[in-house]
Length: 72
Image 1: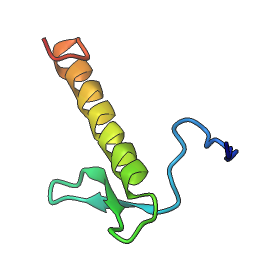
Image 2: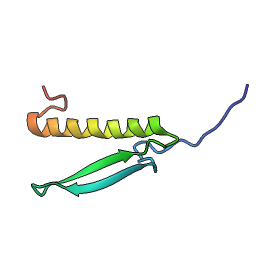
Image 3: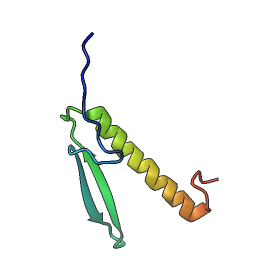
Image 4: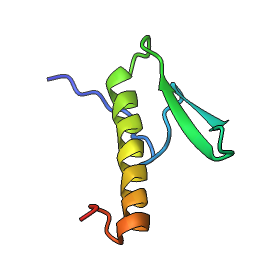
């Protein structure tokens, strides 16, 4: 049996293959845009990271608007 030991990434650390840009929309509000390269060797991890960031932002917005992270 062959075992491979890999170094674990810090939880929540952005993968180097995920690019982040800050943009300003027409209203003057800043927002972050995450982009993933389709040629990334860790495409699944990159997509999961971006998805988690989207869910986190939605929950924060729900908390601000409704007083609950679930939006109920």
